[in-house]
Image (tube, rainbow over all chains, first blue to last red; front, side, top):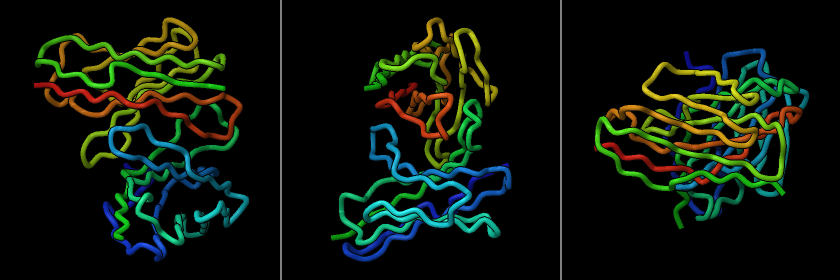
Amino acid sequence: DQQVKQNSPSLSVQEGRISILNCDYTNSMFDYFLWYKKYPAEGPTFLISISSIKDKNEDGRFTVFLNKSAKHLSLHIVPSQPGDSAVYFCAAGLRNSGNTPLVFGKGTRLSVIA
Amino acid sequence: SQTIHQWPATLVQPVGSPLSLECTVEGTSNPNLYWYRQAAGRGLQLLFYSIGIGQISSEVPQNLSASRPQDRQFILSSKKLLLSDSGFYLCAWKVKSNTGELFFGEGSRLTVL
């Protein structure tokens, strides 16, 4: 049973436009969510996170929105740049539960076209 | 600052041969350690995690095993590799008191022929 789902395996966006990556989760106990970015043959790097006490967190061109009632979060990248082309993983966890592993989605491959 | 290294970066092994991937973390103590595998179409699959020396939790039954002989060392092993063990293996660490951010190593590409 997949607790974290990224239903779009891939997404193509024109440079300068907005990229919206979506993620759904099923476990209502999750209270902390993260996005990771991964280039080929490299380890994922942390991008942005959000706690369940917030519905939005912004960091430069990246904004994460959380809709707890829908158990849905999204990552917005604006404006999109060619260097944003990568696989993006959504992850969910339990805040302040240091020993519980994060649960990752399958990832969405973003291609930003110049 | 903290760093994480895993090796080898690339490995080509025949079916039935043994495997040993090693991961070390520097600049922190008593971290939680993780082994993930990225296989095509399956995203990041958690294989093992460890909250302390000698303590290993297995998430997926498989042909692999893990050990933590020292606080900042995590080893992924197999006695006999299968074709299905091919993939990109990632080691990661996390501070126990942290809200959840994982720091990943560079990854190890394993091809079993």
